[in-house]
Image 1 (cartoon, rainbow, N blue to C red):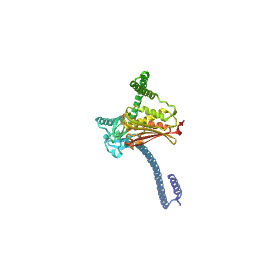
Image 2: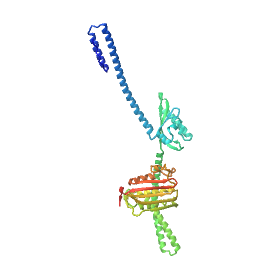
Image 3: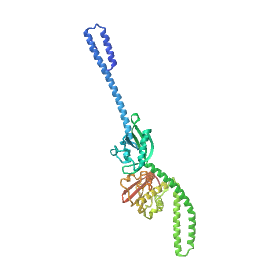
Image 4: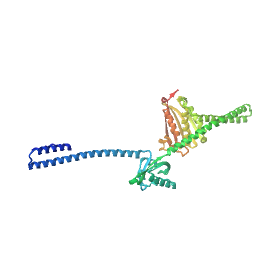
Amino acid sequence: MKVSNRKKNNSAAFRKEWESEITSLFAQKLSSEDLKIISEKFGQISDKYIESVIEDSTKKFKLEKEKVEKKLEINQQYLQNILHFSENAIAVIGKNEEFISWNESAERIFGYTKKEILGKKSSFLLPEGEKYKEELKSIIAEVDKKGSSKIIDTERKTKDGEIIPVQLHVAKLPGKDNEYTGRTVVITDVREVRRLQQQVDQSEKLAVIGQLAAGVAHEIGNPLASISSLVQILQRRCDKEFQKIQLDNIKENIDRIAKIVRELVDLSRPPSQDQVFTQVSEVIKTALGIVKYDKRVKKVEFKTELAEGLPSIKIVPDQLLQVFINMLINSLDAIEGEGIITVKTNVENDNIIINIIDNGCGIAKEDISKIFDPFYTTKEVGKGTGLGLSVSYGIIKKFGGNISVKSKEGEGSNFKIQIPFYKVNIK
């Protein structure tokens, strides 16, 4: 009697082989030797069957394990991305009120590295004052009771001691039976929002002032015209030299006031968006005329070196005027009311070049790369919005040009404006 030695790779095949062998053996007259062979073969087939089942189960387990591990890895990466690349500061505070997690945005906003902050108490970022301690107690109690705390407007302290406005969104870390085991805190830095709000408020004030200025200018214009006419009559009839000199002085000052009134009216009007052929030198002269009325210019010397024969460029003159006024006021701030401001123009290749140079305080090396960023300012709160240079940069870029700066702290700055011919229509 022969028993098949064929090897099978699955349980169904083994079962079929075993049944076939048993049927064949029992159809014959069995001896003790045959029974021994049957027993051995049955043991071998059983071993193979068990081996096959274990192997199949192991493969399935490995496949499922790999799927779960891959899914966990993706979820872990997803959570890591949320934690570390969020614009908001995200921190996890344990049951004992110590920081146990601290993301990269938290490092950027507060200045503390993960190594410096982990293990510190949550009160570490609180400014001085009893109200902040009471606020922290209230947050912990509310989170423990309700599971989260609404967005809270408050303040926190950075590494350099600055007290910054923030919004907090706090959620509970639940443990067994919903036991309080800590909390996650999402901290939003709202400094830029506050600055934007201040800019909106300032814009509203300026709009009101513009309307008021237009009304005042109109009311001044009529009596000023009458006074000017009377002075001219007196000038024609006066024979005495001294009186003529005084009348000339009066007429000169009346003309100056009239010019201020006209420019005030022009400035209060909504800006035109129409492109017209514009002579850059004329816009510079207008800007200088407006800036010279600033109360800080008494000890300021304005120098101009305007090249002749510059081509007229088809642009929006009001926008270019805004750029020059912004840049000149920036120079006035830099020299703090005493110094020299020089404006030069020339043609360089296919560009009109305007240089606005001052001998003021200059710009720190670390600030030069940021000065054209919106809302970036080195001035005190209330003395600058950080928008003048960024708006000017945007306007010149729209003309296809560029603004660059060379500056050394304590020695002054040179702002270079380039407006290319090929980006605009020239006359």
